[in-house]
Length: 399
Image 1 (tube, rainbow, N blue to C red):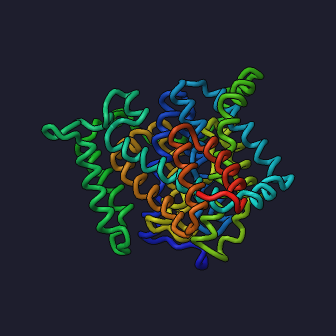
Image 2 (cartoon, one colour):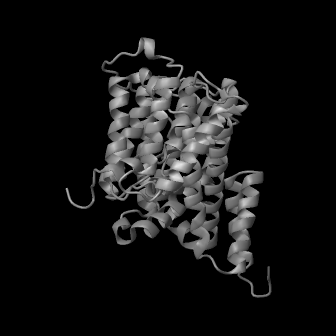
């Protein structure tokens, strides 16, 4: 293997960088919506590996957050989630195959791309703080800040704040340390903490075996599932997918990897995500995408080659095949506060991409998009940002 692949501690640390986004939604969709652990983790792992091998650089794999978050909050059925995955796959195949996505990319102003990155980064940081404080949707549903720890506080101080503070200090001190990578050390410390003070739920039934994913484990979705999924899940997700997972992700990849990212085109992103969602649909997993936030996370914690993709992908596949549902017992050892630390630093890295924006009009677009996103959602912020950016092209308007 050439420089496309490195397998060192930095790549491994970077491979773990996006777990703060990936694991909470995965756990929620398995526990609340009944998705298949084998199918979900196997499809994630395979998507990581195939993406790394094709693009030849670090490539993120993320859950589709609008679909995943709403599905958990409303306790939707596995069939409805599967239907949304198939519909998204077909949509991405169409806009990629017809070249529509390339046309969209050419006419979306750079300030809007930066606005998507800024808004996404801020959302990641916000979610990270919630994980540390114990106020995320999943933690509230579980009724406790750290549902898989046997201690919840030290005196009057919640344990999540203590873990998050220590993890944050470690990350700041070691963020650019190549001998002791921050991401790897924080995750390992979290696992150790969980081993010592965790509730160890599921450990009494932990067993190794062969748990191959089933094909269509929930059957084929009904027409009612597709109708519901289209209106409630897919349409709200699509603007975020186009803006963040395709355009902003490709832009950030070019910033980080320059010529090495030549395969990361809008069309290729659509095709690879389409394939991933067909795969996930067949195996009973969750809708998947790329994403600028995930790329920022992997890169900030040390990933520079496709080796990070292969390592994290192999971990997911091994967990899916040899542990199945029991893999949750291992995953739950990592405190939510540790995942929160990863999200906070990944989000800040992504938000800082606006530093190349110098003009007042460009910054105005970015901050308007941020405000709208925080008040509503990224899809609306994305649409409004495009309108404002084109309106401000007029020299008669100032801000």
